[in-house]
Amino acid sequence: MAQEHKGPTSQELVIDPPDREPLKTNVFEFMRATGGKLLPLFPYLDAGSIVPAAALAWGRKQGRYGSFIHTNTQDEVVIVFASDGTPGRSGTGMARAGNKTHPVGPFFDDPDNPERFGLFTITQRQADEGAHEESVWLLCEECKKEVTRVSFRTVPPRRGKQVDELGPYAPFETIPKTAEAFLKFNENLACPHCGHKNEPFPEDRWRLVDYAEQTATVRRAREVLDSTREFFEKAGPGGPPGGRPPAGR
Picture 1 (cartoon, rainbow, N blue to C red):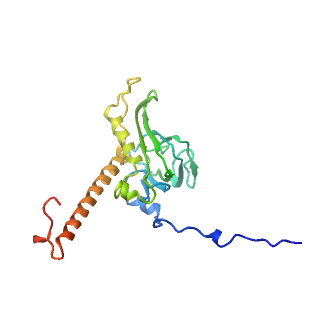
Picture 2 (tube, rainbow, N blue to C red):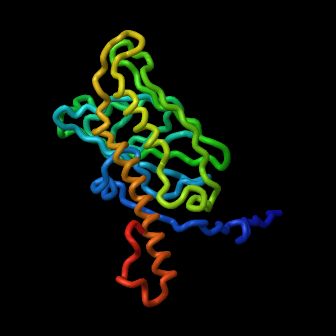
């Protein structure tokens, strides 16, 4: 005698509502108006968050990007949205999960060719608890030994507590720390192992320093806005004499 099949109940099919506002963006539009590499597409950096970051690279005269080594205790997934002239596993539509220690760059077989380009996303998942351990290091062009290394440790804020713990517009720490490695390398280009004088790392092609400085400036701007708003709220409906806060507020 056939037994009646009992499927899942409606309760088992219920998906909990999101605990933050769902966001979406078009990566092509995002990168058209944005400078820099490894830029987070969304503001969520707290525990358990999925953090997709975008990078756009292109060729031009004297267009080399250089390369470095990155270690991350979190897995990173790369998706190539579109590319031309990118070697290896970087063709349009490719997706891959890299090793936790992996090279970054060079991007092109001919970096001086303006027809070369690559549009990527690199996605990591923030740990539910505990720290991320990362390192960025640069090698000598001649002997390939380590010249500069910056290691750092970040602990994602508790779920839903990002602004409370980090303040508004918190940076994606991988970017300023990588910029720090670039600048440290350029402070002394002589290899400590073989004495070779390396070419300066082309930080202007990555613009990670810009991200760090712009983030710091935006955070200061938000502080000024909040303090000014607080001043006017305390002043009452009529506002202060002259209609503006004291100098420096």
